[in-house]
Structure formats: C-alpha cells, structure tokens
Amino acid sequence: MNARATSGQSSRLTAEVLRGPALADLGMRVIAGQTGFQRPISWGRIQRPGLALAGFLPFIKPGRIQIVGESELHYFATMPPELRQERVAAICSLPVAAFVVTKGQRVPAEIARECERHNVPLLVSDQTTSVVIGKSECALDLIQRGHRLVADDVVEIRKYPNGSLVGRAAEMIRYHMELRGIGIINIKHLFGVSAVRASKSIELVIELERWDPTKKYDRLGLDGETYSILDRSRPFLRLPVASGRNIALLIEIAARNELLKTQGYDAAKEFALKVDEQIARNMQSTARRPA
Image 1 (cartoon, helix red, strand yellow):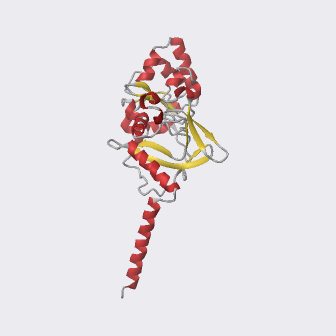
Image 2: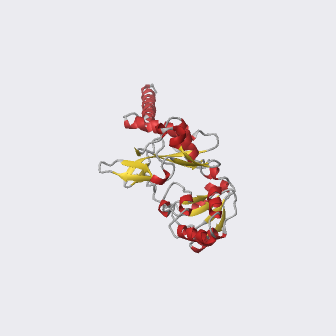
Image 3: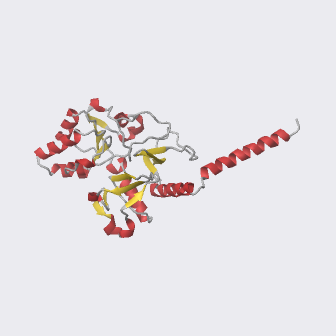
C-alpha cells in the first residue's frame, strides 16, 4: 500500500509500534538499532527483501517494514561474504522502517552489524512468517474464487489526467507469487490466462491488521475513511485478521459492497435512515399520548 492519508488522522506512525502493546503477542526482541525506532512507517504494507538481496534495490520502498524469513536467510547464506556485506549495507542505507526476522532464526552478523551502523531497528520474532504476514495466501484464495491477479507484491501505479489510478505488476514479478513452504509459483501457468490481468483501475484500498480486542472498529460502515495515492483519494477499509476468519470472502464482500455504493446503494446509510425514521415515529407517538 501507499502511505495512508485517512480522514481525521495526522499522527505519524513510526517503528516504535513494533515494540508496543498492540504487537506484544508476536514476542519481538530487539537485536540492533535501538536508537532507530523513530524511523517513519510511511507504507501500510510490509515487504520481503528477497529481490533486494539479489541486487534489485529499486523494489525497496521507503518507510516499509522488511520481513526476513527462512527463504531470504537461506539465499543469503549462499552468497559470498563480501557480497553479503555489500547487499545488506546497500539496503540499510535506504530509508527502510525496520527489519523483522521470523521463526526465531539466528540473525547473520552482517545484518546485525549494518542495522546497528545505520540505526535501523532489527527485531526477531519466534512466530512464523505466515503468522506475521498472510497476504499471498489470501490472494490465492481470491484467485480460486474466480478473481484475477495483477500483482502479489510490488505494484506500479499510474495516475491519468481523468483522475483514474491504474495498477500494474513490475515486469520481473508479473504473474508470480511466493508461497511459504512451496516457493515461487506462476499463477498464469497454474490457473490459466483467465486468472491474471495486466492492469486494473484502483477503486478500493483494504488494509489487513491483527485483531485487537481493545480497539474500536467501525461496525456500521459510516466512517468513510479514505486513502491517498498520488494525491487521489480512494475508499479505505481496515479488516481485522483473527484465527478462523475467511479473509478472502470478507475482501470479496467488501469489494462487492463498494461496487453497490458506486451504483447508488449504500446499505449502511439505508440502515441508519431506517433507525432515524423509527426513532422519529416513536417520538411522535409519545408526543400524542395524553398526559
């Protein structure tokens, strides 16, 4: 996602959130970069730095949290020591928000050293990568439900004079998806051409976040938050993720509901109107009763 600019929000999100109470269940331990927790998180989505470790630094987006799993560390171990040092130094010199190593894995000395040198927070969680993120699995569920994939990770967005925003996949990763335990798969080859498309206009932004029982969520759908992409606003929804929730189904319903809104029907507003009308009738009935 791009940096969020929602209505009514002005506070800056920083890497400090990684060691805050909302993520305490991930059990993250700070390894290096203690003085860097004021680094801004300006992108709502996390990122895996596999391509950057391979030398493709343009894919690293400023302000993103970098998740380092088994596949990244296994690839890192195959590199010559000098190249490992060079690649990590290059990544840490960029304005990344923080690094999180999953599954309690041992952190290579090069990563810890460069994070400390560049004041980049480096944390380790005993949780698996799929607990920390689950975007690709959700996308795969949507494909199986008949939807089409544009990009699983890096999305190139263009703004047109008429105000439309169109997303495309970067050429190198087009049609590809990474699944933990399986590796890189090609959606076009597995599911056919009907499962992919080259581009799509962006009409709705959904952010998946861990369920927080202490947080107040919008229960009616009347808040009307927006998300700014290239100075264009799009409707924005937060979907809390908890065990047992069918996230793909919820995303599909959210998209269908947004489509209905563009066609002039808003279920939340209709419900609120009915409630207001019922309250008005009750008040009139009470007023007509004899004292």
